[in-house]
Amino acid sequence: MRYWLFKSEPSTWSWDDQVAKGDAGEEWDGVRNYQARNFMREMAIGDKGFFYHSQSEKAVVGTVEVIAKAHPESKTDDPRWECVDIKAVQPVKTPVKLEQIKADERLSQMVLVNNSRLSVQPVTETEWRIICDLAGITG
Image (cartoon, rainbow, N blue to C red; front, side):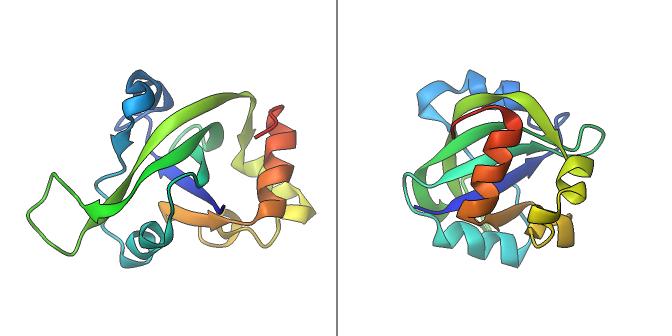
């Protein structure tokens, strides 16, 4: 199993929107960055991810699970763009803010710290465990 982080502007697609989709989940569409798309191509069913609100909140707010491998995005005819489907798993008890992540030396190598603009990014198992602990969840 691998771990990931999915970033979304809450005004576009929020944690509540994701939760509302239930076990059916939703395509993680609209990604127009080749590196982020390539990360989705690496994902396997059952991989876990953090759901991160960007913009004003800048915090991990929940966890998700990959429920469908990379496939052509349904909302475009451009064959370059693929996505995975994810479903909400659990909200965090305490949102983990970007400033908290940046201040934690154990997370200094995290992609989120060093490339905060990337909308889909890998998370190491160690980073996953640290953030789950900070968030008050078992993950």
